[in-house]
Amino acid sequence: MSGTTEPIPSPAQGVGPVYRSDREKPTATVSKSISYENVHVLPQTPQLIALLTMIRDQNTGRADFIFYSNRIIRLLVEEGLNHLPVVEQSVTTPVGRSYLGVKFEGKICGVSIMRAGEAMEQGLRDCCRSVRIGKILIQRDEETCMPKLFYEKLPTDISNRWVLLLDPMFATGGSATLAVEILKAKGVPEERILFLNLIASPSGVADFAERFPRLRVVTAFIDQGLDEKKYIIPGLGDFGDRYYTL
View 1 (cartoon, rainbow, N blue to C red):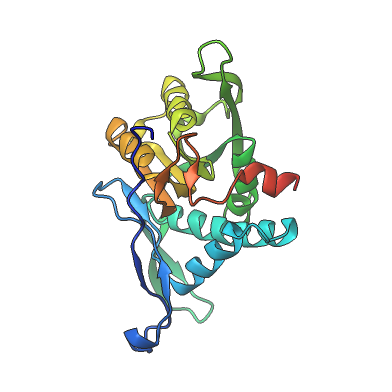
View 2 (cartoon, rainbow, N blue to C red):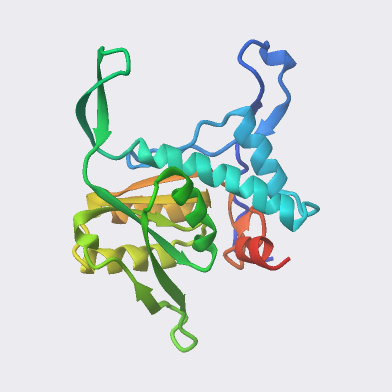
């Protein structure tokens, strides 16, 4: 036996419409909670849990995996936009009446961590017309086994933008950490970075939140933990393979 301990199971609760009593709701595994103000987990609604169930299932085919993943990505992007600053704006309606609302303040861009993060780009484009999108390729160095930057192409004015950093799976956080350091080196203030993610490990997201306390993380689910190979469990397998090839 090794000295490793099994990660603590994720919590379970009744999931279903609010008008149903608790005893009428089926029990489902929901996200772990985490006590960091800069980490926001999507509400564990019946819709979200159903979508996650589909993409976790090993029997889900590629077409359905893409469809249901895109649904979750859209939810993540929409929630991420709620964390951007707004200012008051008054408009006049077609019937000649005024309406006091808000508009977003400042420019945004997306940055995907290749290749899995590229799957989240369309969800951002669906919500933000003509949005600029940059790319970062980070892979493990064969000699040091550490994350290494291999390629980056970012908007020239990225230091003046809010950045939505895109990567669906967050295990140890090595790639995301290096990506944030690259963005900061390009002049992006830490507080202007939002990291959007489908499934995270509790240890990875905790370390990340402590290291970068001024950025915000928006995730759909904090999973049970990591196995001995540092794969997220129960996870959903290799997101990039299932989205692009399988």
